[in-house]
Image 1: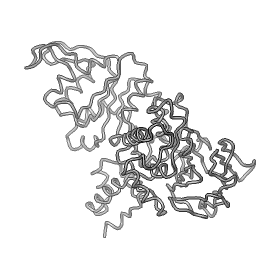
Image 2 (image 1 turned 180 degrees about the vertical axis):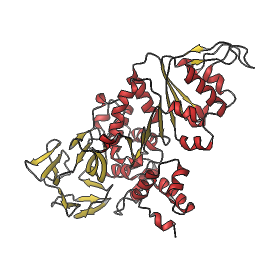
Image 3 (image 1 turned 90 degrees about the horizontal axis):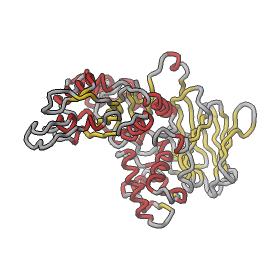
Image 4 (image 1 turned 60 degrees about the vertical axis):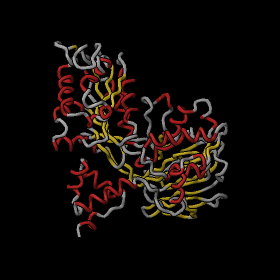
Length: 467
């Protein structure tokens, strides 16, 4: 079973696995503006006393010298970096970024700083290279100190992440894919649920097709005919036999998108198909065997819908053999460079390697909260490529107006406006339930622990609502 853990997908472990988990400071090299396809990197700061940043002939990240305490060196082929640009030092249980006399200075949260005490989620700009600092990121004690995002040909489908718990979830999907276990993918619209479903199908080695069905788009009076097929003459307008979408996925993968929108009668009919592994077309007298691997997705809280009686508990149990929850893009900002690289390779395969981003454009992309998630990012980059024409440098003016406006937040020294909509929703519910975290959790269909994590992340004081 999976659940959202501090903005990343995590798996509920047994006691032996849980003992190996920890939280610790990490630094992410998110984006090189001049080389957006360069693989982003996660650096664990556990046991590290100091990190030195500077320009190199090529990227090189590793120990600056042998022995303890550990000192790391981060060299990037960024001409706007000085050879000795900045130092990140652990002092009195705090991480301090200090300019080392660089020509172009250091920027934290969009504001120039000679010295800054870092906070969780801070965006650091050194030259044309962007980093994100995380103070207490969940990870396994056995994770590597330096982890580079895998090359496209080493990924499961298009799935790639630098976040440790999400990385483990993606890795386990390879094992799940080769089984017949049903998978339920949960997450906001645009987070990439269909990408995971297609990756599962590609890894499954099933011979049939991948058939995607948007349950919310099916005409309510024709749902069963569309799904299960029908015989000629079964109803007015049935002028020929139709196999239906479920039979089209025979020996393949059936992706039921927005399963929470499926009407109650159709839920019962679908349950029979999953139980009996056979389909009875509308108007037919005999069922037809089908071999289906079912992957379902939803942005709705199915567990709460089960409690309310609007979604069948037995169908939910059939669909939720393995559950994953994709966090919104605003809560996995560390992956922005990884995702951008994937999108650019798809949209412009012949010129992606020559593209670069102006610093102001890169800064806006990192500060924007992405309410439409990965889908919105893809549309943003697609339009930018059109506007840049034959050029190779994407400027701020090539980005949508809403993304450009994110720069008004940058330069204030504040954290990005990530998850503003989520924060406002949470504040409203906390006010409505007078600070009762358990009641808010029930309303949102989330675990109580998840609400507590979000309260901490968005700096919301539950006590203030109980007065």
